[in-house]
Image 1: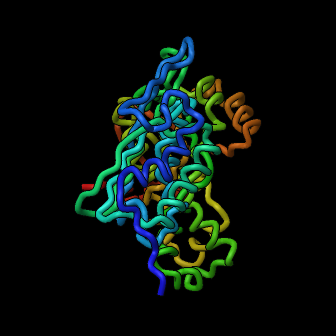
Image 2 (image 1 turned 180 degrees about the vertical axis):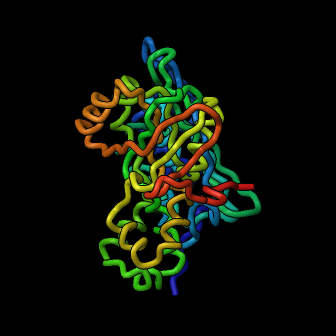
Length: 334
């Protein structure tokens, strides 16, 4: 039986697999220096974000390295998308418990390369090391916005409408299918529906095409990474407002609806489970027609799911208008 080649040095990892990812960025210097250089476009400022992903928490040991590479970059770029920022580059720190194999690094670099091409950025630099514990990947992404124009989470106002992009809850179901393939049959999913759910978990899609619409019309914005109600609560606390969400207005995929019809409790739990990487935004009433038109022109589906209100209560209302109990919503590391 053949044994996969192990990469025995940091230099083999960097120059063999990571340096090609920096080829389009002059300020990366081919990853042959200790630092990189970058400057925002005239009239712009940088927007900075770092969000680590760790084996066993954000991805599974059995996930393909191509998917891990994509996801590591995508979850960070999703935050830039919600801020109305254009991605311009990223740094990345890699920590391995043991030297990776050549095949694993090749797949991981391929996933990063695919994500870079999709998001329009290049690797600028970073670090690799070996330490106890699971694989940890920490990108730090850099974006830019016109000076003073970053769309913040703390600026929603009572009366603004709550919009979300895409569909909700798919990723949570996708993780459950990956962990237990018998869910495929139990939930009466077609092969296409099961593939959709798995892909939503493995390959999130930052809504970068919504950037111009957000800069023109959004009062506040953030991405949904830890579940709709948890992240909405964060926006409300930061903005000093409450919210009322219409449960019947939440945008759901056909795959999610199939699970809801088969096992309602599974669907309800997954709706607030996290990993959606959609955009949650506050839109003033008089901006709604143009915002929805701009989103449609960008081929991004957006849905009005409720209103920001006075006070501090965050409510989820059912079909009969009564408040629903959404329990301990969303993901929390602690």
